Image 1 (cartoon, rainbow, N blue to C red):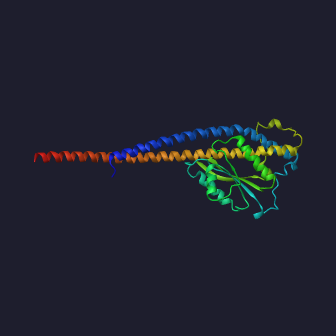
Image 2: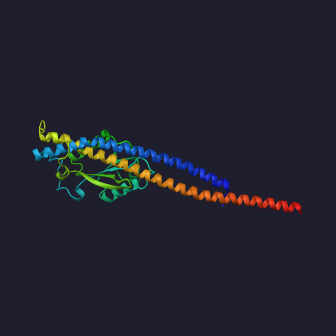
Image 3: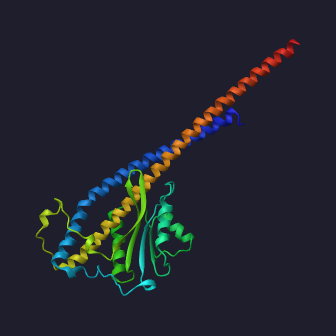
Length: 294
């Protein structure tokens, strides 16, 4: 059994670790709230973008042919699927990164024909370690999703699709189901489908009922689609960012609770060790007194 001094040292060490886990919890909580506000502030713009696309299709259904091309003639090994995988730059977030990578490996079966695009250092390091080729690695942090970064990714994805280098595009990211649950999910964003582009029914777009598109509907559609893809990718980046910090908050809370349990157990052990030491000292004093009398 460890002596009282050793137990005290372990208790101090655990308390120091608790300070770190509490600080990380607070930082993640702050970043989570900020990211949610940023996403909410950008939603009106993307409502308008989606509504504009829907109205263009109503006025000129042939305008979106290029982005609606399903390329049914390319099947099996001849069909190239692109996967945009959003992971984190840091660990200490429970199973967050593991779940995303596992989902990617489950659905990306044709490694030779598929194209892989990765956001996040941990995902990049994992695929490199497994010798899985990464076609494009977006080498900037996943810790601060911005519209400019989302637009850069969206423009590159649209370019690859129009050049027929990819036939389908899936975004694999983590979404928050609720404050306690996150789940890895994959959503197909290209080619577009009409059921995904619907007119919005809210006050933000009502005064655009009689809009005209210059110079023509097709040109307007091709210019707006990258903004639509940008909105989806930005939403996925922010959702992943929020999910990461939510997972980290839960992991840090679990670590803090475990630390409290350990301190409670060690405090009991410390009291027992201290009591045993006191008893030993009393026994030695009494034994010494008896010996001196004899």
